[in-house]
Length: 374
Image 1 (cartoon, helix red, strand yellow):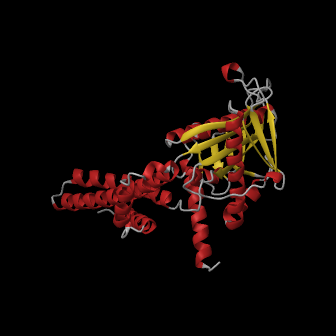
Image 2 (cartoon, one colour):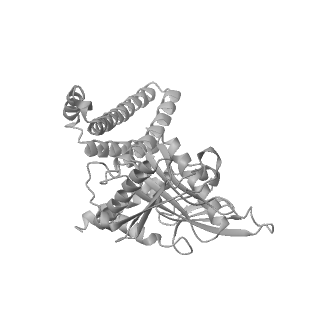
Image 3 (tube, one colour):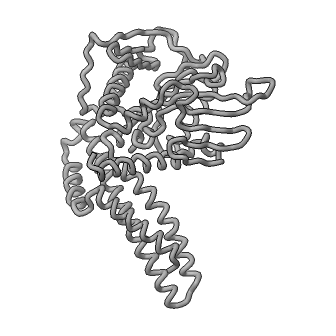
């Protein structure tokens, strides 16, 4: 076996150790039996919310077991093929097995990162807010490009995307938009995207074809599970109704059904502009509780708190990532230095590399802190 392949095998074995540790593989079969017994309870769906949570937890365990055992079996099978090929001097068998191990290494590394999404709210659905910053029409257009990028990313993940509210720009794009993105680890993946995003390009709105720099901010916070109690004092909030603005057409509101809730002590403002005012109140209140929950997470998690403090205003000096389309093609994350020249791919939602780099950096930072006894 070539030295390069031996190194990949060693990395896969490390990933398998972590995967086994994260799910407590020794007790996993017993816990799965318990889940299966509870699933067969005829009264399970008397409480649909608890039932859905149980089914999600069971599926997460099933996926974890299957992933671990699949990688372990594939690794063992391909090592045996290499040994057999070397014994019989069949170079084709050896090459095919080494190629398979290389692909398996990439899969194991990805699953290892996913297993590190074990923060308190990482598995939750998430809210994603986008706001245009310095740059007028340019930034409104940039905000709409970011919205498209995240929707594309979420769809590739198989997540469900719901538009909660949107305010159109005066000439183009959007001033702001809020989405709810639902799926396993949605918040865990997207939380690294909170910050200011900077775009450099030749402006399509400038007849002189000059280069423009635009900014938009992204804020990500977890959807609060119903079993998490967040108390909101009615005297601390102000509820306003208004007629939502949009592109018009059959979905435009003709009544003041949109809802805006302001949390006076913190200054947090949330909105929802579906057709039903009752529905909007419910959505906005859930969003407010999620924002308040995020603040509590910030107090308990220094890394997340520091990221939000560093976000600042959507303008110079506060960006976490730069997207340069002119005079060259490059997207670079300023926290991890991860970069790519595939700007089209990134704007079409290929963000996993950036998210993984930030996640790995955060995990490494936490490991160092634990080692130092902090």
